[in-house]
Figure 1: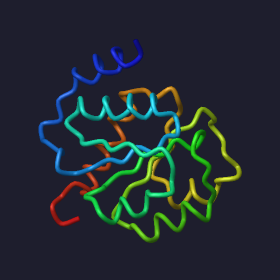
Figure 2 (figure 1 turned 60 degrees about the vertical axis):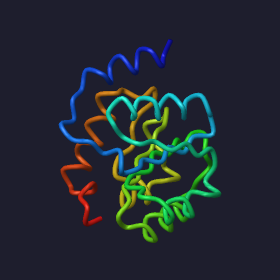
Figure 3 (figure 1 turned 180 degrees about the vertical axis):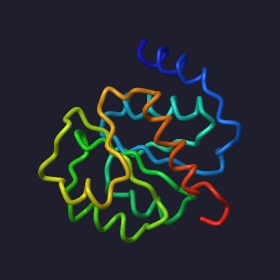
Length: 145
């Protein structure tokens, strides 16, 4: 039922451009939630790839046209050092986090300096769409990146 509501919301948007050649990686240990976010992205003509652990993330970023990573930090264990390393090795990739908690004192450095946005769960399609449009306006989906 949640998927139906999310997809119904997604279909009301019009991007005006197609980003299917650019990839968004969704990292979430909960396979169902990961699939729901990818289906939401597909409704906006984004290409979403599901990963359920961080073990292959860096390799996947290097081998693909990944421009955005959406990580559920409640289901995938990660720390400041790991986020810092990922963002420094991949400067052209935007990192978004999903979490039920508003505050993550243990990730203060990462959230201040390395994460583009942290979105509160459950994911509000309007908010996610806003952040993706913001990334697009910053030029992430140009052919030069």
